[in-house]
Amino acid sequence: MSVDVGAVTGATTTVRSVMRWTRRGAWIVLTLFLAVFAVFESAKYGLATTAAAIGFFVLPDLTMFIGAKDAARHGHQPGRLQPRAVPFYNAMHRAWVPLIVLVAYSVGPIEWPPLFTAGLAWLTHIALDRAAGYGLRTPEGLRKHV
Image (cartoon, rainbow, N blue to C red):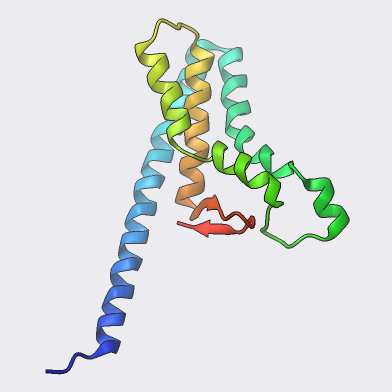
């Protein structure tokens, strides 16, 4: 019995493609839910909450500026982070970190809405990155596509 390697490889590629787009679709749905929730919280609690949401939506990507001076001096490859920025970037782009903030806020004694909304915005940023196909970075600073 012979197996057509091309057919098996093609089927595997198709399954991977379907899984990738299914995963991205789930991240898109999560992004939309979190964004609407963050906007609702911002409208409900006012300026401090809105500032926290905007700040924590942008904050994870500010880690890309770590080592920017070195990149300017030694040449820069498009899409590549400086290796010393990678641990900071990856830490800020792990979904469990804002999830811990949200759960701790929800079950703990803290009653400060900007903290909850900051967690929502941070998780929204991560979900948006995953929906766009961006994951964490390799130790060399290159993108890992989701």
